[in-house]
Amino acid sequence: ELAWLRRLGVTKVQMGAQSLDDRILALNERGHTLAETHRAVALLRAAGFKIVLHWMPNLLGASPESDREDFSRLWQGLCPDEIKIYPTQLLANADLYAWWQRGEYQPYTTAELVGLIADIKPTIPRYCRVNRVIRDIPSTNVIAGNKRTSLRQDVQDELHRRGVACSCIRCREVRKQTVSREALRLEDLVYFADSPELAVPCEEHFLSFVTPEDRITGFLRLSLPQHNPAALGLTDLQDAAIIREVHVYGQSLQVGAERAGAAQHSGLGTRLIEQAAGLATQRGYRRLAVIAAVGTRQYYLERGFERGKLYLVRQL
Image (cartoon, rainbow, N blue to C red; front, side, top):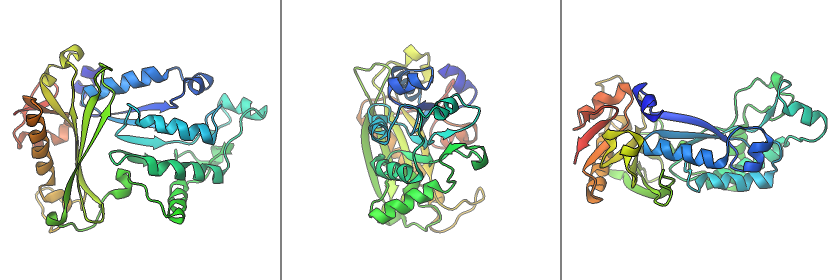
């Protein structure tokens, strides 16, 4: 399946983990276990995919207290690159509706939900991006549960009131701010995640350039796997460290155009790749592979990579 996804050009996979508690998963008839989520994420990471997990507070059987504990499990081996937080919203055609009618399910109040997300958001690691905080379901279709389309802003306002900041990637993106290359510092955040051979975790490096104000201008995700990629049928990854993502923020310009201070056009991506190549070489890897979308292949080919079967590969 991993090879098939690569042949289709896939570089990122989203999965509905929803809960990391087997009791909650069974009660809500999710059809999978926590162990299966861990295995799927480990396999995706081993193949270099970017991983987005969806997480749902306020499921049947959960409480604000259990949700806080559940959220912390995301960073115990799974370590997703991005997450979407989707508070449960009750619809009339859902099986949960009958539980609600019997008084056996109670949605959180808006205040409870804002408080919960404001509690957990500052705990998100700097390598993760929070893509969404609500699901875009028309409020007229929601029988009970969150109807606030501005929930993310409500949470940000609550964090500001508390004097607390979130350090996820989305909260630190430089966006349209002008940046000075000389003022940037390079951070190497190292963490460990599940691998297919569970006795040996995968070493991850989140390389990023940040401004003096801690705004992120660009980053690279580098995996230093310990498993045998041949077992996955992905021969391109033999003896290879894997670049799973390179992303540079800043003003969007036409191809070939330049603008002073534009992060996307200051060579940050190349500098991050060379840093990754240096790290991989120091650790004894003979090759550096990258999972590249169709539209970015030329970028890597111009930086010393060559076409493999399913990945672009550069000799070290």
